[in-house]
Length: 268
Ligand SMILES: [Zn+2]
Image (cartoon, rainbow, N blue to C red):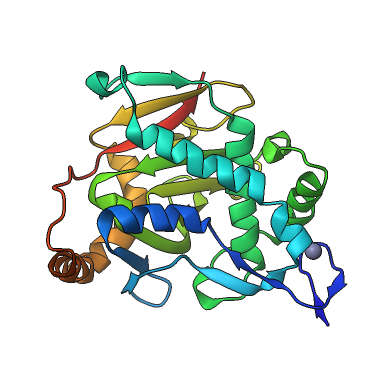
């Protein structure tokens, strides 16, 4: 018998649980042919990834099913933001208002933090959200959004070369405070580590309880926003370039990308 880390029940068998949805990894793999996985936890490390991180020792099948709704919504939302169907395309530097579910996007970020925190795989060890576990779990079991917890969350959707990076969960340092950062391929989830909220560079993008989510498209991130990813990116850059090169050979051709284009979500 095994014990589910979410509900505490003894079950015959726990199920394989992805730290972030495999559908995101698959979508990026189909488009880019390769994913670079990066970590700085034990010095810079980069490897070529073909699947998302998963952990078979976290949850039972019943609890795993509780993740489905928000995970599916995040996959759908990411696609919608990246495709930017007409009439949005022509206005690519503008701000768009989507009828999107900030409650489900918030739950997606919090359940991803929960999975990384419950996981004992070494690449997830920097995330310890123990003090939030009970609250996140009870919201999930009751079918409620975690947005009621008040934890500040912001989500970036990335495209261009950034799309194929998948970074091990880490703590991103800003001048005033640290935040948890989990980066599935094509996304960065930033979650405040305490009730003090997100640092200024991110708080303008935090999700708030409202139906509409504003998506801002930007070609270049601000200096301070960039800081959150460059500590991971710079030491790994050379290895990433090598991986991209061999993927290029395998695939025959790749589309040219615009570097550093990404979308930021912001509520009204
Ligand atoms: Zn369970």
